[in-house]
Image 1: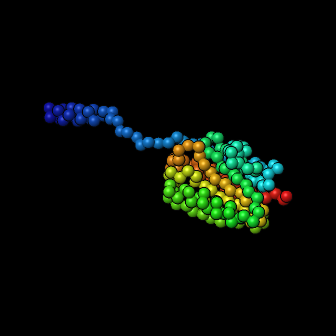
Image 2: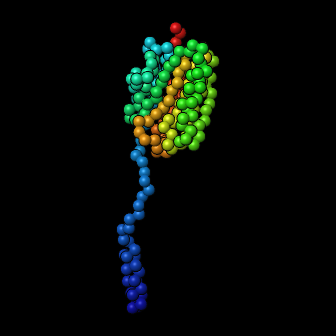
Image 3: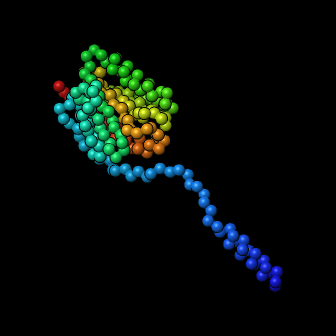
Length: 193
């Protein structure tokens, strides 16, 4: 009987001793980002093009010193991101604009893991182009494109974040904004002049 009491007391002491609060560090996490529902409005002004953009974004004229008429930025304030849109009139210089676009994408090669491109063709609306996805945790721009009608109009777009790139943690935001840019591309139209 005495041995069972001693054994029972020893078990209780072992259980109580093992119930100490011990600290185990948690892995580093990121803030949860709540995204709004997808809703779009039409950008239709005196510009030579029109498209739909999200209601949670704001369009501002490009105020950089190199800006030309019809250059805009689509600003996504909650995400510190901007889609820079530049427009050029084609005057027998389409090859120059295409080469410039290709060069600007290739500037991201040192920081990119991969650059994939896909064609965009809309023969009904006469909108053709290339879309570039740039992957890599330190790439400054993750999504770029150009659109043209091959005769008169050329538009180039590039998505940038106003912060030090860490695209692994920005991946949910990049995917969210990429869908908006793709919607903009599919609703893009040239205006008759």
